[in-house]
Image 1 (cartoon, rainbow, N blue to C red):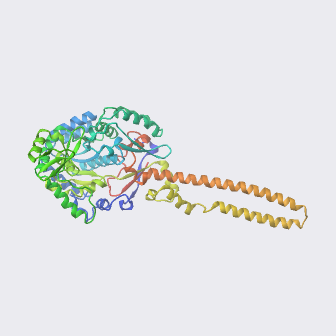
Image 2: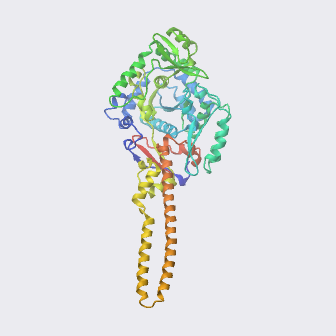
Length: 547
């Protein structure tokens, strides 16, 4: 748990349309406006939508035992506790459903929105289990089949000087295969050693580094390292992890992939039809392909294209007829992987999903997929916005209390914030004001000298020496004022820079940039679990949590 001095409480909520980082599509979806509603399966704010979705998903026949066996095998590898074991066994029952989310395997669970998606999934599953009076299991889909390593390699920290530090894992090899299968090279251990310098010193630093050194090691697959860390920070929560890169799962998916090969334009045309309507008010997140499958092995994940009546593999001259590709599917289903359109349909083909926890970008592409779900004969789950959160540390909160800016204004560049503050709060030209005061003092001394000379001529010398002494003291005072002003300006600049860096690193929302390691280092490996009761499941606005 967070120490008592760092207890968390949610204080503020900010409408998404007040933050420039969110699209109008996402803002409308958070409120489920009439304009966006036709593109989704139900209103995520109403329990009746989940009740209807439960019935729809239970009407689909699934091999629950086969899936549960895979889950048991996989979660045993990553650390099986009683809560997870019980949830896996619940999935064997035809009465159980799931709340599911998923994400690419960002190094060290980066960025912060990955833990926030997970928190939302666990909390919503628990709430719906009570409301629906049935087992609702939280599931995290590990996107280990994605092949874009550049999206998983970098992460960002804030050092002890409140400066952003961007770090990247850079292996020697250049694998284009599924990132989940990629085994760490020795450089991962060097990277973790370098974290000793990048992470500020805290009571939790050694605990965090010890865990990373134990699990992020040479030859450890990225998928397993990600799973170990996710398991640890959400221990005892009942969260079930799942990797689709499994031979049994691919066997189960053969009917879905067979349909895609036999009728390759079916889903694509459905997405294009929806996208045309969507584009009248919003935008298209996903571009379509004629077929929504990849072929993959350890070193490659390559898209399949359709040219006339032949299937071609990107980067290869050989092509396949439909029958030849179907034969390959029958013989090696583990070589096939769904793309961004078929992946969610595959997910809900495997699992009895009543809700998917999605970020803003995912909600945009789900908006294009409703007709594709219908064409596949799979019920589209309720798309539930993940909790969008900014965490404010006590030292940052003190800065916010000191300055007259609203939270969203810290999205400005720190120098612009300082200029605004200097114009409104600081003396405009302190040096000139001091010079004018010195001139007035000198004028008064001149007048006094002229007056006293009428008393006795010898007072002239005394008056001049007094004027010189006053001038020297006033010039010293002027230098003191200038130095104090510069110190004051430097302090204000530093405070505003610190606040802006923590709240809007790189002028983006904190959750989209910072690595969870920042807060794990400050508050320990149980930190995110301790936020479980602090986040609001009313995710229709951005949440500010002060620590």
